View 1 (cartoon, one colour):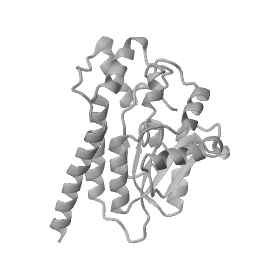
View 2: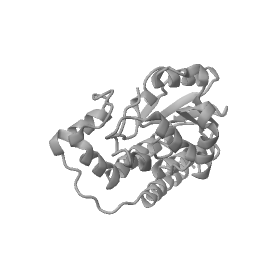
View 3: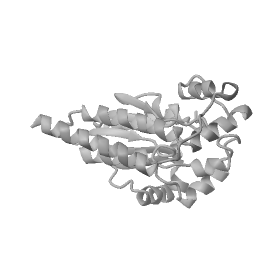
View 4: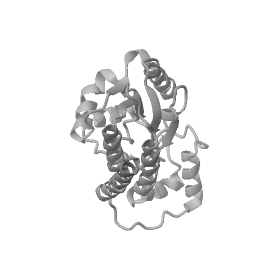
Length: 251
């Protein structure tokens, strides 16, 4: 019986990866070459060795645009998702319904790549007014690989919490509608930054929320986000999974 279940999940994994690749398919890319050390810079960003950068260095703008636009970004996402799926298949869920995953929202569940294309893929400093106007439009597409992962996790029986630094008072409705329209249906809770957390870093805010979930009895098996501030701090879960994003840094 266990072998049959395992075989079924292996088939599901293959289907999930194929589905995400089909949705995010790109033409064969040109090589994302290391122009002026930019590949090394991008790797250092993902390893959290380069921090607090306001913009992508001018000499690396073409490199980051190529990375985000020509297929390597999707392939890197798919690699992370494959690891999360295999990890999740090894978890024995309890009967109390308290096994959980925490997912970030922006550039994790839904993509702001179209917005940042007009900002030269990180070549311009963060503009909170402009970004809020963008978010209010509710037009962010799903990240295909993460949508497939989300459906896998909820199907398996994990409670999925969506945790975002978006302002609760301004962006709650637009964010809910955007997620719903893109297929993120059935999550346990969407948590935005309330007024009591204004002025706090993302690390402090998200740590406080995860602590609250742990106090409610939830077992956080996995924590997924595109920023290190999604993953650092207290109660970060049994495993953290960093998604690629060289366009900006959130402290």
